Length: 313
Image (cartoon, rainbow, N blue to C red; front, side):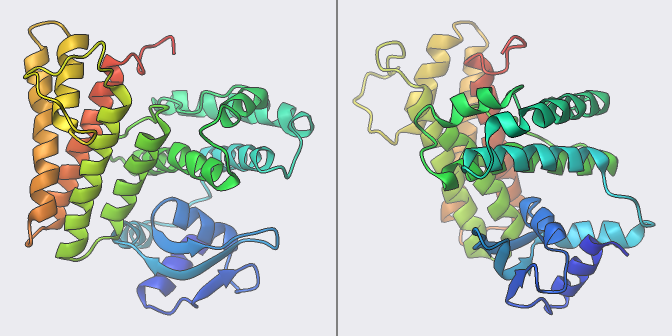
């Protein structure tokens, strides 16, 4: 039995300690992997003294993954995920002042090449666009990632869905995956709605997923709508949170063809799903999952229209 399965089985029995660290008797690296994959939820209180998680709990996704682990024979660790984890850890270390770029740049470039080859073999797009750590330095120092925590969260939004996709592909599953857009707030919120969906078990929590989906669409509208280029179609003065009208105007102006009407309906439907779920006192997992997928699909559509998915980017 590997460390991940042992930890998840302990969590499923409700027997994990309130604090997990390097002295807990469990593999803290395995704990970190499970938390970052969304299989455990916990408060990360890691610092210079080491890794520590408080109040760890298994999620719905974690229980599903545990059943998969229990149903198959033990397998060696996924080498591609290990390479990507090393890649991420190096990016964290240089962005938080723990290591110098020139000290690890050669190792980073080698890992980046290996990761790219592995992802290409699996038919998975590589969301990590930084071929060199100086490229990563240019990104984190551009102004919207001012703190160490914001840089860690950015990398979490970049790598965690990728780990999920690789694991699902290994198990023969196809998953709807959204490659980060580069719009930091939107990407962070998309990562959050997926995490919240995995953790939710009650009607109130599923309602909260609807609220967060609505916030994603509001942020998306605020990000892409330019009043000078995208006039509001019905001419009203829109509020800053009017996602429907802003996205409607953006799509109509940027996709000036007969197809824009169907795309506009798609975005409106996602917003309606989020609003309805937010107020549905009998909200269910399926309704919340549909809302999350519609929201992520809309983000992907807007990213495509914006040129974020063009091959030369």
